[in-house]
Structures are given as structure tokens and as C-alpha cells.
Amino acid sequence: MQQETHFSPYMKPVRLPAAATNALPRWVLFALCLLYILPGLFGRDPWKTDDAAGFGIMWTMAHGGLQDWLWPHIVGLPAADKGPLAFWLGALCIKLFGWLLGDALAARVATVGFFLLGSLAVWYTTYLLGRRPEAQPLRLAFGGQPEPGDYGRTLADGALLIYLGCLGLLVHSHSTSAESLQVSMIALCLYGAARLFDARTLAAAALLGIALGLLVLTRGWVVPLALWLGLFALASLKERSLVWRLTLVSFPVAIMVASTWLFASSIVRPFNSSPFDAWMLWNYRQLGLPTWNALRFFVKNGMWAAWPAWPFAGWAVYAWRRQYLAPHITLPLTFFVACTLLALFRGHPDESMFLPLLPPLAILAAFGLPTMKRGAINAVDWFSVMTLTTSAAFIWVGWIAKQTGWPAQIAKNAFKLAPGFKPEFNLIAFLVAVLGSIGWVVLVHWRVSRRPTVLWRAVVLSSGGVILCWLLLMTLWLPWINYGKSYAGVAKQLALKLPNGQYCVDTNVGPAQRASFAYFGGVPFAEFDNGHCPYLLLQDIRRGKDDAKVLQRSGEQWRLLWEGRRPSDRDERFRLYQRVN
Image (cartoon, rainbow, N blue to C red; front, side, top):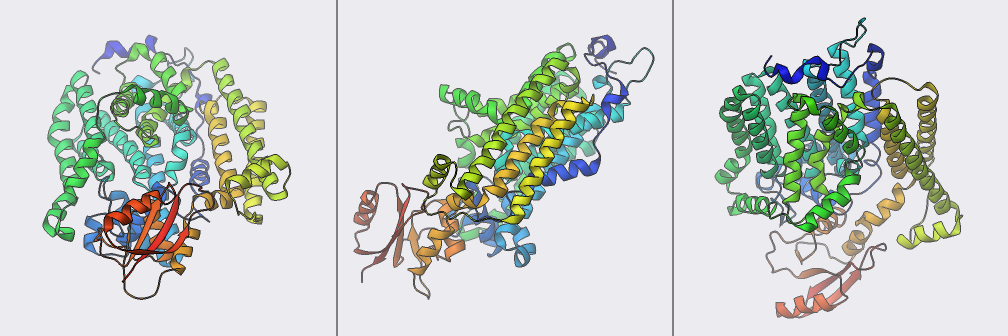
């Protein structure tokens, strides 16, 4: 009962009847998760850039030996910078299911597992924090307040809905990349921390250490170290008995888990070297001095990436300000602050830096739901209905234009972005899109007509609308999107110009292109750029100028065999040369 003065009941901002804590059935939550993650996994090729690059590492591992598993690479292009865990799991899925599903779809089985792991971790973390006495609503004068377990389950449902509604999660959660596992491992670390602050046992400390170690193997040590330092500072201020568990249990366990890969690499010495230097260099590059560019990028793009979580999370911090030491506020807030500081100190900002923010924001936002006024909830609902319904309607109108040619201007713009694309009608995709749209109308009608009092009513429209728009894009527009983001066509063109037999191809193409050409075209790239191949594949942006410089530096004579590009990309060009004599 430490810090009792901060948790006295009259300071609590929540007053709820038991009727407001009706939890969603488990099958509904599971169906929502599947409806979110499955569209976009079927009927497409690996897409540029991270999706194809990540698949290339998995595919190389699955069809290689121990050296390929210890030193991640894309058919000879070193790619040990982020970490191997996501690619190990993807390669394992290719080995298990590739014969049945095909290698590309089999790799996405791991993506489904990553997403479900993160969703479960967000739900259970919120449940653990929500049933604590500090988070409970005020006891009503005549009884009728919710039970701690019921209250925790309802908050967990709200957190999961908010998590599914985050715009920044959509694309990355469907890709075969390390980022899709990183966000789930952040959620797992949050769960381990919640268990530690709740049970305060050695097992909970070990679980947190395992999660941190796995996060190191997923995408480097920078984020895990920042999270551990944040938890250490929080424990020093509030739960000093946990400092020793964090220091003597969690930290050593994390090091032991993370060192397994580097220890095995130092023994085996894959390709007579070690990935340690490349991995450490990538981690060092994640740190830098804060810049105005990073701050502007964070504010401009973070508002959309973290929508709709950040308004509810900000309100939660304000509403619970008098209980600022309550674990259900301090724990996710610690994770959020640590990841925000890393984002601001990042030298080269990109969209992936928002992913670690989403699990703590979703959990924190859930505790803002019971404190929001009816007017604010209605405003959020109105914004969601108007924005997402308009987006869904535009997706439908664009699809009709693409299929029929009317409205003419919209159809012209669609084909201008994808020259040579031939529209096709898929009855199953059409029916799924129609059923999803009908479900959205039913959901909006239920929310408006019934006016439910359950806590998660404030976010059900935001999450449902995001799922609907993604479903429409991945059914009606999937062939068009796949046409513009796949390298399958140009890879097959290239393969026709190469002979049969034993030879190799030198190249300067990027990771996504290399993976696609090797997978779709069977191009035998040189391993680790040996520079003595009879064929040379060059990629450039400025027509001919970059090629001339490369060929001149080589000191050899080359003959142009083939030139091609993706129809949707006007700048990126590929040229295949053969060495003369």
C-alpha cells in the first residue's frame, strides 16, 4: 500500500456503473484481428522496399545453410544491420509451409504471428494495469460499480481497438520486415514490465529480460537499452525494491538472450567473418544530435501515425494528473517518453520510428476512455464517421472509374500512375468489399441509434473505419497496387536475356530489387560482390550517366544486352551488360 496518499479515492477521475464495462466477446476480438491482418497478405508479390528486402533475407536463409542464418544477407548482399530474429522466424515458416503456400505467402505466416503476439500483449498489459486498485473507479454510494476484473477487461478491449485503429501500424504490420516484429516486441516488453510491477517476482523480472533480449535480436540494442533505463529510473523513484531485480535479473537475462546470435557467429565465423561490426555500426547510426528536421518530421507525421491514440492518451495524462504515480499511467508513459526521445535524437528520421510509440500510446489511451466527456466522444465519433466514410466512398468511386472508365478524369489519373495496367474483376474480392461496407453501415447505425454506454464505444468507429478502408484497398485495388509495387514483371524480362548454365551477375541494385530479381527471375547474383562476373546489372536514375561512370571505372569493355524498368516508375531503370571477351 505504498504511496497511499497519491491514490486516495476522492482524487480518482472515474465514476462508472457496472453496465459501462460490458466486454466484447472473445470471438469478436479474434475476428477483428483476423479481419485486420489477413487482407493484404494474399494475392500479391513482395513489395518495394522493406517488404521485398525482408522477404529476400528470409528466402535466402530458408534455402541456405547455417552461415546464411548467422549472417543475414540477400543472395550475397550483407544485411546484418538490424538483427536476425524476424528473418529467422520468416525463414522457418518458409521451410514449414513453403511447399504448400509458396515461399512469399509462407513468409507472411510469420507476419500474422507477429501481429497476433503484439495484439495479445497490448490486451493483457492493459488488463493487468486496469485491474489494479489505483485504476479502479470510485465506489458508488449505493453500489453497482464494476468489479476490477470486468473493468480491466473492458479497458483492454478499448486498448486493442485503439491499437488496431492506429494509422501508422497498417502498412508495417503487413510487411515481412523487422519493423513488424519490433512493434510486437515493444508490446511484449510492456507486458513484462507490467507483470514485474504487479507481481514483483524473479520470474516476472526474467520475463522482462527475455522480452528485452528478443527485442535486441529484432532491431538492435538502442530501443531496448532506452526502455531499460526508463524502467530503472521509474523504479528508483517509485518502487525501489524493483531496482535490484531490474539490475540483477532482467539486464543479465537480456544480455544472455541477445548474445546467443553473436556468440554463435563468433564460433562458426560465417563466410570467414562476423556480422558484429556491421550490426554495431547500424546501431550507432540510430543515435545523433536532435535537429529541427527531426522535430518537424516527428510532429508532422506523428500526428497521423499515432491517430487516434494520441488524443485519448493526452487526455488520460491530464485526467489522472493527481495520481501521477499510478502504474497504469507511469508505465506506458515511461515507454512513450523513452521512444520519443530516441525519435528526436535520430539522425535520419523515417516512418518506422513511430512504431515503438504505438503500444504504449494505445494502452495509455485506454485509461482516458472512462474520463472523457460525452461531447468529446461524440466529436471523435463524428470526425471518424465523416472522414472514414468519405475515404471508403472515394475508394469505391475510384474502383468504379478504374473498371468502367467513368468518371473519366479519375480513371485517367489511375491509369496514368500505372501505365499498361489492365483492370480485372474478381468476384470474391468484390463480395468481400460489399460485405465489409454493409458491416460499416450496420456499425454506424448501431452506434448512433443505440448510443451504448460501454467504454470502448468512443473508439469502435475509428477502428472499424480504418479496417474497412484497408479491406477495400486490399480487395478492390490490390491488383493495381501490386502492379505498381512489384518487380515481378521486370525480373522475368531480365531472366529471358540470361543464358542457362553456371555464371554470376555483378550488380549495384538495392536490397528490394536484388531480392525480387533473384526470387522471380532466378538471377544468380555474385555473393558479397566478388566483381569477376561475365554479366553486370546496373540500376540508375539518370539515363546512361551513372552507367558510363561505372563502366569507365571497371576498365573493361561491355555490351548492352537489355534495358527495362517497371511501367509505374519513370526514373528507375535497369540495364544488363555482358563483358566482351
